[in-house]
Length: 119
Length: 236
Image (tube, rainbow over all chains, first blue to last red; front, side):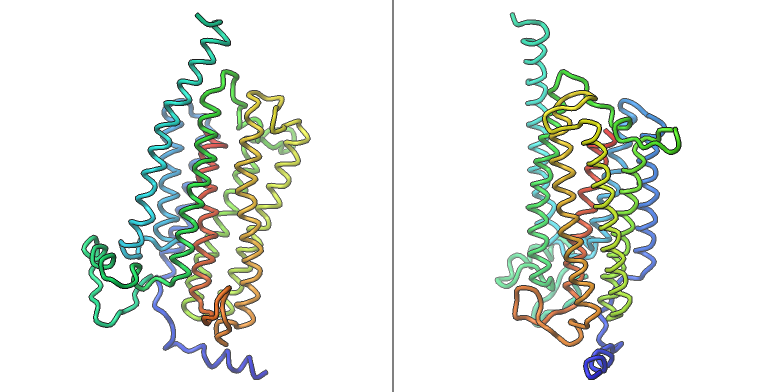
């Protein structure tokens, strides 16, 4: 009993850290549901080609951005932290660029030697 | 979320603030709990791990001369006799987003020292995560039954299985670890460890509701990774 009393005592309004309003979390939550629904619809209606890929990427980046900015609080963090986290992503972009060149070369080699039969 | 005031130091906004924070000959991340900074650094390294998996998947899928399996057929579920494409995956996505939302609210209520609300929301998050892992087990066993193996499958390019098991398996492992910690923290919150100032994890410092935000960062990251897996592996 003594411990529960202690818990109630410290549940004091003065000690509260100020937080964001609940509405912003609920809005982001709703938006994430809607965006997920849209990206599912991309498959449902069997969009193909550039339209499919651009829609998938658009919804993906929007969802990722919302989660990072609001659920993970990056929108409210100081730039010293935000920049340390976001700049390394350019390394990943470089890696994607390099590996795109690599898979095209591998694909070419496979066609050339396995399908065409070499020179 | 960093509103702490530091005596004798002016917290400037924006890039000016970044320059003065970084060059201040003190702690660099002003007002950020050390545990939170460490969690962010860990998540950054984890981002690189998942990026390497997804990039190797891109390379593998891009360089095969055999057709890639049609994911919306492979991952379809039969409702009655009608196949619904990606049904299970869509439900899994919604479950994970739901649990992410409850986690975000748990962090908010934790900072407001609303112990019970915070505890129930963490418990709800844990149940959501458990549901997700359960559905993933179902998905894996279904595919294994249909003959999908890391070295081959009946639907198309033989690399499909190895990428599928590696990427979703590593993500599922993250979710499982998260669920274990969510249950531990449900206990810690309900037991009032943050009100009675019990010591935190791996430290002699006193526990605080900031630990819930750190836990939340991990959980949102798991959701974040799923956004990319959903887009690149299932929808592409």
